[in-house]
Amino acid sequence: MPVKGTMRYVKLFGNIQNPREYIFKKNKRNNSTLIFKTRPNQIQFGVPESLYQVFKEIFMEDVYDINKLVKTLPENPVVVDIGANAGFFNIILLSKIAGAQIFAYEPLPSNVAYFQQVIKDNPRIEKFIKLYQAAVSGTEKDSLDLFMEDHADSQVVASVFADFNVHNTKKITVPCISLSKIVALNQLDKIDLLKIDCEGSEYDILYNTAASVVQMAKHIAIEVHDVNKDTHNFRSMKKYLESLGYSITFVPINNFCYAVDAVLNS
Image (cartoon, rainbow, N blue to C red; front, side):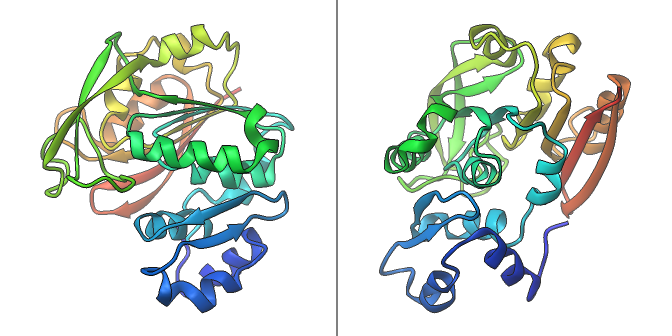
């Protein structure tokens, strides 16, 4: 469960070398970008106002319970990140596991541009991240329509569903790749961690990908949103993943979204 109160500062000090950047400058973030360095493996990155909430979710609220997560992974895990956003999950993962091999997929140009700059500013991590500007689907298609907020800043809640967020008034068409094609093109024979955060597209990806491909992922960390009462809801997703042999643990994020950990039974 995301931590609250003073525990957020415990997480901040555990994940960031220079936590005072946040403590003393957070009220000035409208005027300048906050610059952070991770620990124990140093990665330097800037946090503009548009990414401030995402930074807090990953590095302070610790929504992925990162220290617990990395203990479940091998020394140099293969990670597929669907919905990489601005790359903060990958940054914190590489700060804990320096040799993680990450295949990151993000459809929105502003997020990709930001993440590319972080990689450029930290040459050490370049060989560990393959970043692709693409949405991910379960079925083969060349492009996908997404609904997003009508501004150029980094986006958090862009979705294939027009009514997913009341602020998503702009429609864009983005390149698309299937999960099966990701596996084939990158010649993957296993996925140690499949992270999915794609605002409702989790159903298309997991329901419409061959079970044998999904089961290549030993561990799936996924945000599941209640989209409808039929099959696109947490209970249906939980039942489906259990049918594939996964053990499920979960934490409600709010009244329509769940943080789900699915671990393949050996």
